[in-house]
Length: 187
Image (cartoon, rainbow, N blue to C red; front, top):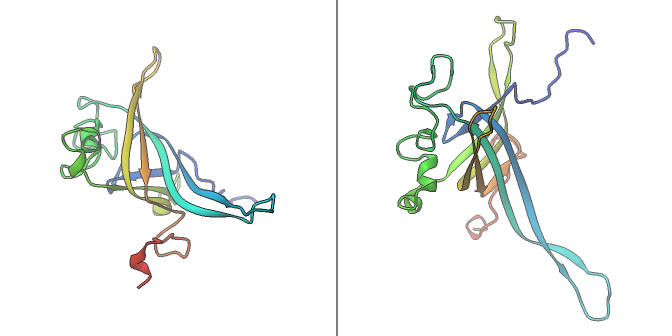
């Protein structure tokens, strides 16, 4: 099948947004959706009657290759005005990664959405416009951990862990979007 392009999502054609802004040099993203269950048992029966769900949780990690404010930001397409990508520069002044990690700001920090997009179009053919297709959206995230790795032949990589309330496999307008389960939706 000549001329057909595969639709695989790779690190080369993916784009990550945090706090509504593209995150330059995001190296790794992973997440887990867990549904905790408990077995329902009764006297006189050795096997369980059923395994019933009792909680839904989302957690994950992402890594960012660090650059400083002295980096050549003209070559970093989504860089933030030459300020580097330290935690205080991931996001904006009202809500950023630093506020999730600073003990004096934790209570006033705001949640964020982590969105994964697939870049489609253009490539080498500049006549085809580039578009983004939403692949996943992790809603109402909070950072829970930050670490750093550096080796002799490498670059500094900041590693972040987060929890989220929901994970949608696609755009919210799609039928695959998950919804809340709370009392407010029963009315």
